[in-house]
Length: 140
Image 1: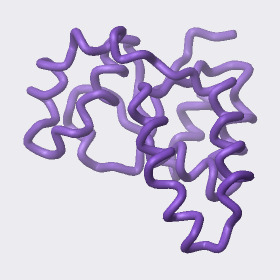
Image 2: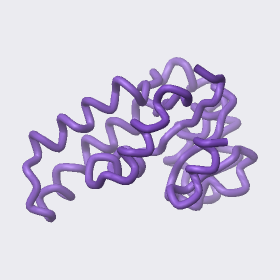
Image 3: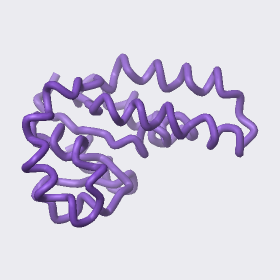
Image 4: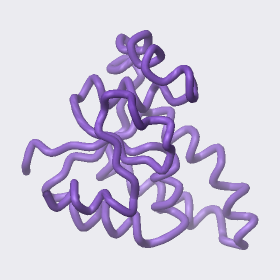
């Protein structure tokens, strides 16, 4: 396995459950890329998915099993491992969305990029990839 790693935001976890494109990218590159998500990203996905699934008429139990299965590839990072970078992360992102500090702090602690659909990460000093471009990072 390479040393290539990326932190995924909750919106990427949600996309992986709701559709196939993101999930396929994760599974396709799991052998050569290390995927991480702070524990709060999984908590957020579990919080917001039920309502999104209900709107789409999708059975929640089956979809939540997809999220659970992602944890074998997208490793959940415990808050204790990134909380030490909270102040630095907030300095970089608080003007945009202070709630995103765990994603940024997690990426800073691992020393890797972020995969998100949230433009709040641009300009934080951490490489940021969106789904329409992340294949260049994953293949690279």
